[in-house]
Image 1 (cartoon, rainbow, N blue to C red):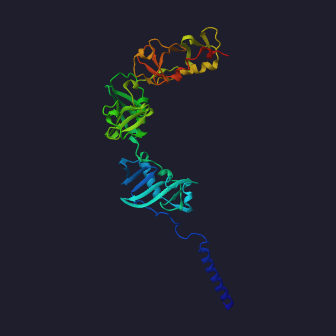
Image 2 (cartoon, rainbow, N blue to C red; image 1 turned 90 degrees about the vertical axis):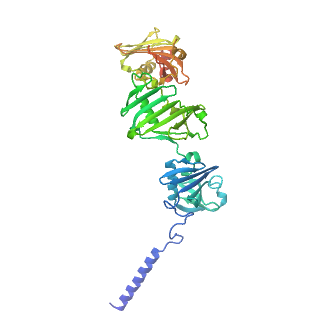
Image 3 (cartoon, rainbow, N blue to C red; image 1 turned 180 degrees about the vertical axis):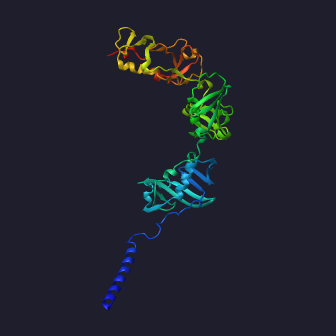
Amino acid sequence: MNRKNLTALFVLGVLVVVAVVVLRQPEKGQRVGERPRPIPRLAVGSFDGLVVTKGVSNTSIKREGDKYYVVAPLRYPADENVAKQAFEAIEKLEFGDTVSDQKAKHAEFEIDDAKALKVIVKKGDQVVTEILIGKSVGGNTLVRLPGKDEVWTGIGSFRYNFDRDTTNWRDKTIVKFAQADAEKIEVKGRAGARIVVKSEGGDKWSVVESSSPVAKLDASVPTGIVSALTSLVTNEFADDAKPEQTGLADPATTITVSLKGGKSVTVLLGSKKGDDDYYVKNADAAQVYLVKRYGIDRLDKRPIDFRDKALCDIADADLGEVSVTHDKDSYTLVRDPKKNEWRATKPAGVTLDPTKVTPIAGAFKDWKAMGFTEDQDPKVNGLTKPTAVIVAHGRDKKQACVLKVGDVAKDKINYAAQLGSAPEVYLVAKWATDRMLVKLDDLKKK
């Protein structure tokens, strides 16, 4: 190879080396190495405590093994999912660039001392780091360090993980178990009422014993109790309630669910607080809770409430006659078996609007009461002289339902009613009954 070729090869080699070096160098302004961080990266196990300040609420949360506890202002079990997610949010913190170093921007970014959430990260009693968490912007979260003006972008939206007062860091679970594990339910009332039912698998239950007869069981009642108890949670803690207030020393109702494996859970229902809350506790713990009425209504049952609540079950196609005695708005409707059309036989001469008859004819299929009145005396429920009597007959006359309607119940959403000559006084949904208690003029074809 001659000298000219050797020189060309040398020059080419130098150019290749220069090109590689240039290509591997960062562009002007490009960051080299790990991106700067306002706080150090915190590995799992490098801290075990958080102190979160939201306004005037100051809460300390501690991780002890795989459990989490609120340890200040008082010690309580923490909501495991909430606490775990907060700890993981600190462990996974990543940062972008600074967005401002102007103190005047802090209020706008909700990262001033008045609006920011302050989080102190601790290992034992030692402070590891502190951070102020501001508003979320564009899927990320603004943060800064106490005493510093620089505002950083925290990658991801995580303010919600810390935006809680002490109450909302606490575990609100009263009892919890798998619905399939429930084998038996015992419900005891303060006055000696008692019923025990056992699971026959699925939604099937049978009565073991009862202080009052239950000829036919409404299986939806025990199923509803179990469903409500599997993850019963509180709306509010009653930490300062006195025993004489709660009524839990002598509970109004005690519910015990026996579970597979020989375990059981017992919930005590106490007195009412205000218009819509009840005192409740787990029999195995000291904590007292408040639960809303709609949650209590599914649990607070007497033996009579376990009875079947069927009032009538005649399908529209099988219905032959409907008669309603209701003062001046009484009427009788009869289906013409040949034309399959409804006509009014009482009062005579009324031409019916078919669209107004449809909801009446469809009201008797699988019609059930909502429950039973607290006081079963017909006299106090307006049933010695009913305000209305509803009678339905099947086409073959073999099926028949007779419902006597009394006063509107205290809850204002039900009527007191009796089925035929049966002694029980039911609570029947007002909206369902009012479909039959229409004004006579409303049935007429206009």
